[in-house]
Image (cartoon, rainbow over all chains, first blue to last red; front, side, top):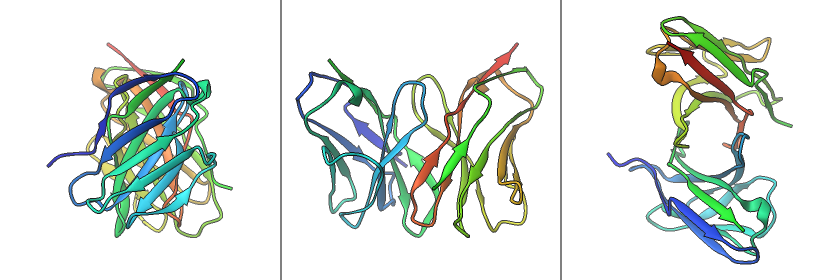
Length: 113
Length: 113
């Protein structure tokens, strides 16, 4: 049973550029959440997707956007990158009917220069 | 506002001993879930244990148990018989009624041989 997968594992961008991160949920999961984890901090909730719609959003600017596809996979897009966007981006999947267990992927480490 | 507090930035424990990692939370939601995750240096968040706010008994998963004291709004993680592989960051998290997750700042656990 495949767990949550994310790509790429590492990414280096420069300020002002745009980036797209990808996530495939655990088999059978229909809900995907994205988190940003800065160095030495806990994960911060960005947003959650269910049925291809953004259902919840944390305190992140509109530069952060996402998408969920019919197969439940998801993308996180960040426009106009800032140095402060450098972080580990974690994707997590869960079941709408059973949110008590949320499984995380290995993350994408983004470095903005 | 939702809030998770982990007051122990770092903890040390002797191998084979038990250790308690503290977590307090603040919420006005009547229904919520409490989680503990382990994050090794590789970055992946590993689900350890879950406690629902209406669960009467404390959750246990192998060597992990959650000491849930609802009136005190605390959800401490107890790891019994510590192993060298338990050395990692540990995060307490809460899921609110809107399925949004909030994480603490983490506790770094080091197991000493």
